[in-house]
Length: 142
Image (cartoon, rainbow, N blue to C red; front, side):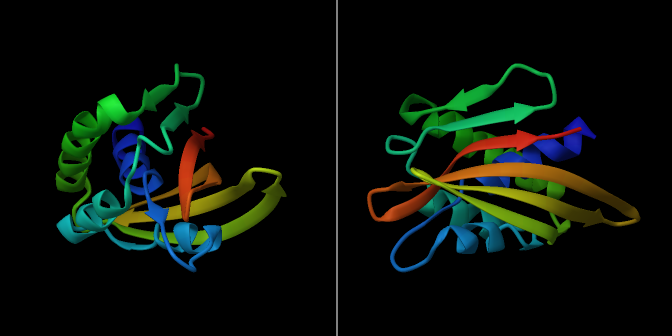
């Protein structure tokens, strides 16, 4: 499961949005079919210098990506897209908790790829980074 979950979350969790979009739109960006265009869209909106990303998966040590990790994250996302190409992601449950610095969203993602279907519970912490909303932390419960 880790092989599927980590690439998926890194693909999705680095999304940021700009302009009049809100944090709920960031969650909605997670849905759809994973393609090379998905990665391009995510990379266009990523700004790790303003909003570093921390990923927690179960009891494992967290991984952190900051401005120095931009290239490594881009390479990883391209590799993840190759592994997940064609998978369909759908949010089946969403709870939003407002916080002073942003929001915390608890999501259940249904990930379908061929005959494989998994439900992945995820928590996204989303903050305002200038004019953008950015995911700063992803927690995957097992």
